[in-house]
Length: 285
Image 1 (tube, rainbow, N blue to C red):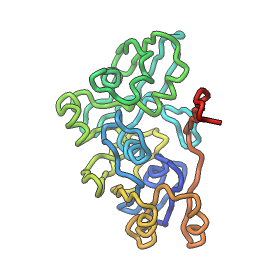
Image 2: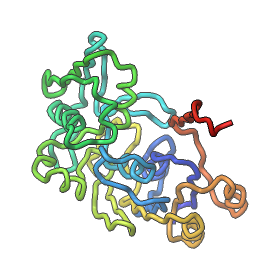
Image 3: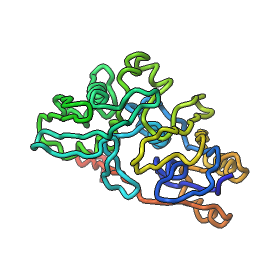
């Protein structure tokens, strides 16, 4: 049993921090890490993930061209470097030798395919609008890709770091969108094993995970995600050893949890919240 931990905020990558060799060092890895989520993943297709449970799973299975590390800084991901050629041309140089879980190479063609899929109108991905400035993606060579934009887009790098993981073109074309959502393949530190909706989702460590990721190498053989929507049953599972980590503890329970000897992990999140004011409603004061 790993040390008891509670994750009270919406921290998708905090789960990976416990399961991978990130900033902390763990010398005796456990074989299985069981995580209690506040909800089941809504989809295993990362283009349709829009809530915390899905982000935790997607972060384990997939990688982006660039990433935000645990300090919120943009760092190299599948791309080892990037540069603005001019104000409407963005170039990425990919890492050599990275492969998807099925052995397919993660190359410039995969990047081109992934962007084209995100922009498909018939797919209607929730984050499609974040990438509409991309007019075309040019494969310069196997490891170099250029994004040609219709206009400068100051938010594109941020969107690429969180909303557009690189996907395997041959596998996805073979199995189709529905088949990919049922059995996803990525480049991440964990590989898909099985998903029983509303019961559990199991991932296995990727022994060939590429060097240089800020996520680090997997430190456990398996991660099991269990959706337990209600706070009290989820906390009870933690206390009795049914899970090793609890996600989303209400803030008014933190003091009691710490008093019971549990380790509570809190951190800042890279997240924007919006408040919209309706100023023209006569019913409002």
